[in-house]
Length: 67
Image (cartoon, rainbow, N blue to C red; front, top):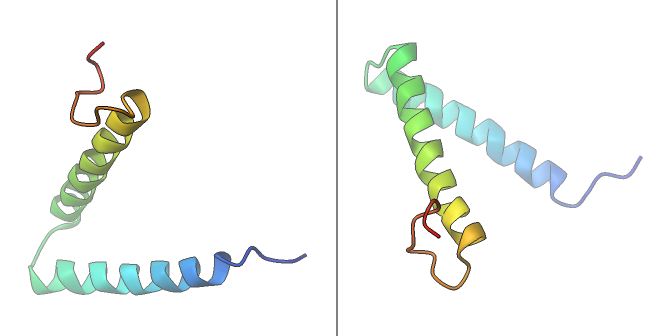
């Protein structure tokens, strides 16, 4: 099986990201719940703007639920 050209770079980036997250949590003395709350808030922020661009490609500043 041939791997997609992006597979290995993405896996390497994910590994680096996980290490960064573990160090960030340790260095900031965060509990698992606090860390998860931060990650979910960041993910929600990203998806909010993805939805806006998807639903209103000509006006991405318009909220996703607006007609």
